[in-house]
Amino acid sequence: MSNAKEEVNIQKLYGKASTLKKDEFIESFKIKDSGLTINEATDHINKYGLNEVKQAKPKKWYNYFFKSLFSPFNSILLGIACILFYTDVYLAEIPSYANIIVIAILVISSTLLEFFEEYNSNKAAEKLQELVATTTTVIRDGKEMLIPIKQVALGDIVILSAGSLIPADLRVLEAKDLYVGQSSLTGESDAVKKNVETDIDLSSIDSISDLDNICFMGTNVISRICKMCCY
Image (cartoon, rainbow, N blue to C red; front, top):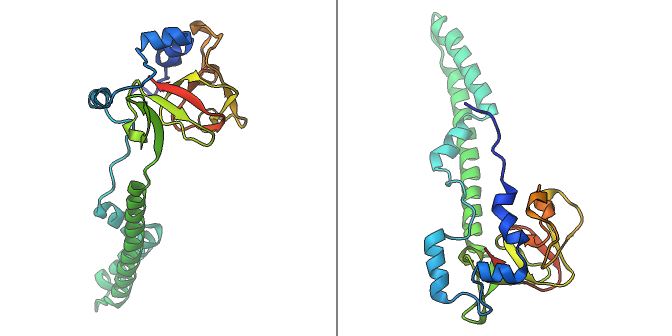
């Protein structure tokens, strides 16, 4: 099996959208000032899927149970129980199960306590996550509309302001003195200025830090109101 790490091709993913002039980008991606229609957005979601990162499947109850059963503390107790079975039962003239029973009770008690605590807390966290619906503002049918982030479709025009979470990879269409915090991606502690146009050419793009007119999903707007397009 190869251990080589697959590298993301930044030029392929973002090169075209970044290096096109604004008017060329609008024409190439057929962007309209009125945004997508409701039907167009629905068609795009059906074709390309929801705008969400795939999450790992929720664990089953038995995953939590076995994790609790074989916790470090229980593993030590089970090891002691095995030794006691050998010394108090197998080698003894008169088998004694008293110590083994005590350890079994401790293991069962510890397992059940840890299992119910972890299982209930994780289920509560999952329900809370379902209740928290992060939204963003897009233009649909010429009107600003607040929608869940997962409903953002390819071609949507997104309106963002200071403090907004960037809901998808977006090309900046309108902005002035726009600063974005993208430390979660690049490690840059300072906010990064984003522009409508860029002077960089395709061959010079080495990392996402070079893309000064592209904003990335999961980063956030530090200042100014701006208009961007999901591509």
